[in-house]
Length: 365
Image (cartoon, rainbow, N blue to C red; front, side, top):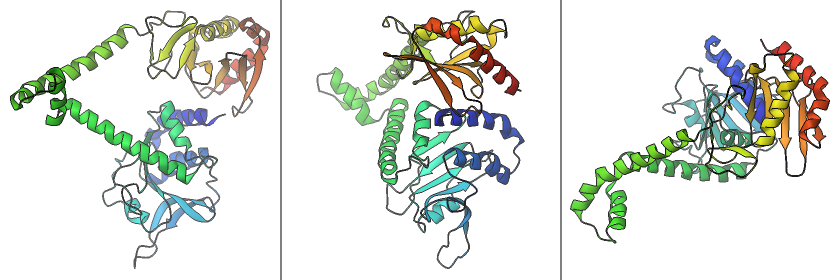
């Protein structure tokens, strides 16, 4: 099972378990430690994950932080945990105090669901007030999963993360500025539009007149974009299960392409839907086909039951040079890919599809 699948399954697990987690310690055991494990760290090896890590501050000895991730005996990341229902704040937080006395370049504040990653971009050895990355495990996107992957033991590179952190910080700052200007346009912002409309000239009176118009125009434009996307969204028919990701159908797409995601990264092809319908036709005698659903990702198309990403039936890969169908290995920790020449070859693997279906049904509660 790849990193993305592991995190998505873990996200579903959190959603199911969170209401039964009553203490901070239970949050650590049920949510935080499993995530550290998913990131490749041995949570039972104190040379990698040290619980209750000591951070002495001046004359105050024996102060501890919940976890420290170690590399070659030195801390690379400090983690402070709260109960999953608690709001995260740095005010009077141990993480803020301990960061400057540690060698670690990264601090993480978490309630087991939301993870806030900090470093010292603004001032060396002083933790920034704002995180450069926030990952909510119940509101995941492909981009967030890829950013979280930077902290995996196998990919961890301090310099690369610091470089990415600086870019993310600038990007977040710019986004906040844009958001603020859109809702409450500043004089400088309005002046730009006044000059653009009036050939480079402006007066203070015009700026005053244009301010509500600029604000209204921006809001109207955003509403127009949303309305346009809604009007061209793909309508699911009775025989086709809905895609979980939000997709937008363009007026004119290249032949063979059914839809693209809003960010343009996920392309749903006719061949993938044809493969999905072939699988449905094979399995319709063994299951109500309305339970067979699919999700489209950047690297593959997956067919599952009841939109359950834990126990899937098969994956489809349609490339320019080859086509493949993938079946889950027994422990769902890998994929057995088989190359096919044409989509009709899927019928040759009806036994494997039925085996995958029965395995998934036996595990779904």
